[in-house]
Length: 264
Image (cartoon, rainbow, N blue to C red; front, side, top):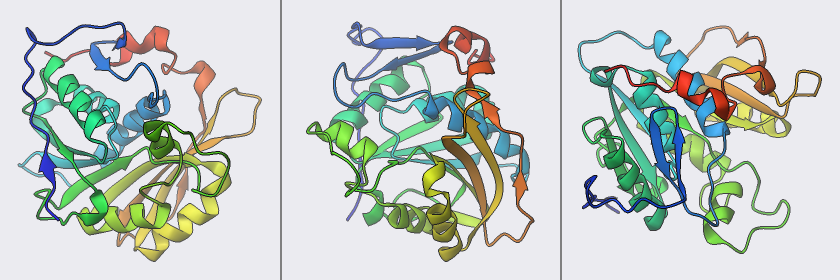
């Protein structure tokens, strides 16, 4: 199966501004008014992934980054602002056609067409050649819940975003591994309750965990999420970095314009 590139026919003059267009610093992000809505977790993993680029092998060519399950592209957009545009080339894959179209609009509105490509299709069916890989860095904010866990939303977009309806953990790891260069980095955000399962899946596909950071919604609460990175065919000791306390961080939307500012 060949992926289909969602071409954007939008320009700034044709973009229909609506109440669902949100401003995060210098990022303009349109998203559906109902159904799928991205969360601040997307910015958290984008910031974490941006920090991981310090560990990438330096080269003359731009780093190639893959965003799996991009939705309306908040991670790709945030990464593009956090890193120097000439240093990166981002490919963002989304299975849902409507969300892929929304992502294209967001790329155009933020003038990032040169840095970000949106591909609509099923990552499980794609080859490295389809996406012009392999990649230096793979990032994802995947569904947190197994298909059989809890009540699945009747809204298709919300169901796919929250539950493993179209992509389970094993399939995510398999898809990421086949797209990664040797010694490439995978970065994810995931529920702490599934940490053992996550680490086992990473090991199975020879992505060795290299760093973890627990995420607390409040400083006095147990961690609910974990930021984790792994290296394909890696062998470095695992580092557990200081936790992230979201109530003390820039992730508060009031501070977004301090974090996501254009560098031009």
